[in-house]
Length: 197
Ligand SMILES: [Zn+2]
Image 1 (cartoon, rainbow, N blue to C red):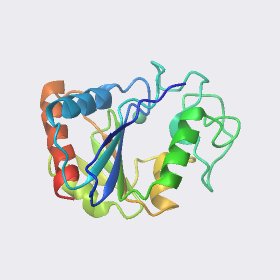
Image 2: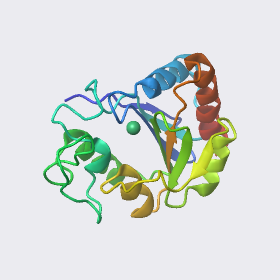
Image 3: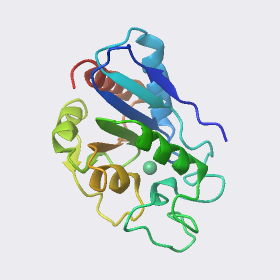
Image 4: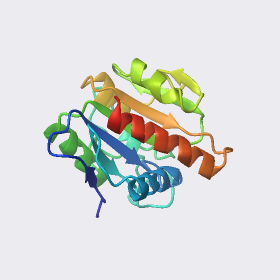
């Protein structure tokens, strides 16, 4: 399994921020926003941005092993669940995509982490992410919330935000909005993260 990983940084960067697209294989928009931003913004800003345009190379929600990556993180609340759309694997941290992220987060002192999902039209935050959630939501005008409305054992947000205290933002985009309009908003969000945050 190959995960494409891109660093956009100058040698004297201030903060380091991780941005992840396509956690779920059937939510492809993040990859497009990231690649489009990288294409148009070649100069580096004050913060380092680390991009994973596409975490899940499968074309459905779960990875090729049939695991929901957003339920497979080794959190205190991980549970062995039923083999449905939210199956978190037979054991926590069993999936190579999850191992890749666990290792990456262990080795880097990220100041914030952003993941791009669809379609719930919310900016969800975990851990100390409320301020950043509002900053990001200035460009989207969704709802800011610390709960998606149902339990998410083994989630990435719990792993990074709740348990490791890294501001972690899960953006659930509005699928109804035109992709190009959303793309412009994401350029502004990435630009904010790179140059202002
Ligand atoms: Zn998702």
